[in-house]
Length: 432
Image (cartoon, rainbow, N blue to C red):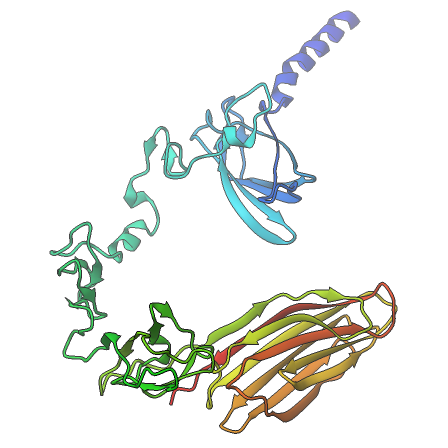
């Protein structure tokens, strides 16, 4: 009797074992890299919707987080390609607290580890999250799809391929008709370049005009028939060589003044091409001009050292213009203080001393150009360094090249450094 009971218990355990076993898993194992070739560090959050595995095991909706260290990814998942309905996993990669990218995986049954490429679904070609049972989901079954399609631009009656498109009054896409050499206006009309649509007046172009003035080796004053608008549209050539504004000549209205060393000599040929805006059709205010921007260098020197410079050509800044200057310094080390300074030509805009605890210094300055000087305003502050504003006049001539210098030095000889992390110099041209 005891033996018969023992055998019955053993059979019960054997029969129960398959019921306790989970579905067969597929291993995904790979090494993930960043675009610069370094191993990826972070984690992947894998989510899925309910499905029935190929062995009839019900799989509930859930998610799992997989750590990725030194690029190593290892995870075991229930196959989805033989599931009912065929399912997929959504994998969101996160590093340093930022969502980086998302992939969709279709996992087949496999007895050997698979790489990510083997399970990655190609969106729009081949397998897709919209594929179930081997056939596409009807458009009407996708929530919001038909409403989104209804508000998309559609082809109009005059739509044609290979041309410039415009949106008509009904929101349909139409093709603009015209000659290959025509220009297109913002109202959708076309015509020869230099004209405008809907009765407006557009810019005119003057090409290869000979400036008026004696070419005798002594005369430096010449004029063109109209005022170039904008002034940067003037292309002035001397013997076929393009002259540089502020370096070879200056322009005031329609008057050209050649600088020393560029005086036209007997036999020279001058040609000018430029744009002119007719009365009643202003070109609009000129946009900001980035004169310099970037990062600087670092120094441990106890002498004031230029960490970056910005060279502004002669005549670039005109009366009425404003120039905005921004700068950021950092202090590396904990042994000594430092000094930072910004010069506008020969004028010291700011020079202050940072202490050991000043890990970061920031500041900005503005130059308002007038006919006599540039009125400067400046503000600086730091981690410990208190906020300090200032105002002054800079009398450096704008008719000559101007150099801005961003400088730094250490208070003592140590391994500490002061670094110009970033700077920018932006000109805001006058509109009148």
